[in-house]
Image (cartoon, rainbow, N blue to C red):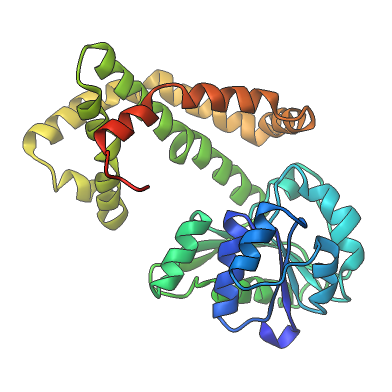
Length: 321
């Protein structure tokens, strides 16, 4: 991608920081755009960048590629009002998630590619894997192309993924489409990797503590140990995990696990997916964001008061994480 001039990374949060650093290490000339005086701007300066306001950073990238890695609820307006007017002729815009394009009406003017390059990992993992010479799987899609039928837009998406480390060991590139990436990503977040796992471990922890067990041991068993077992699943799959536990654990898991994930929970998963596919979740989130996110703040406050954080401190007093 360096043959198209500089690239701009707009937003210096978790993904923005990781992508900017990986791209710079891959040899690209990276211009960072961030809110002046904000925390992202300070982090960018500490990492050796000289951040510019979003529009200025877009313009400074020349005829290159612009990654818009900003909050989903803000992105459509920012692209329309600030980023699009500053795009150089032929510049491509890259998104890390399809929410704003699928549900928020995000679009780029004619003559520009709109690409989706979605790393299958949080920004911190994308960066740490890159530093270790590894990559993460990435999904790519062409949302809009300036030159239909030429394949140029898809090639640019692949080049961006490659610069982020997708072709390194542990990585990979899977071509998909906007709706598939967005819907599966939302479902995975809600059902498993953020929502489902958090609710499951908190429910299990609470069950033990309310039954009178030591909260430190409860925490270590149902939360702390999870990391090691997920590492095995990551390396060897669910069958690999089952092959590596005792007969007692295996019998208990196969006979009792379906009581936890049962017909009721499967119906809830199907309902959750339907809310995503119908746009109901997107509409709910847009309304919440427009109102200033009061419900999210209340839910986050309640989650922090459930007792897991205090139990973690007591169970792992020497931890620095």
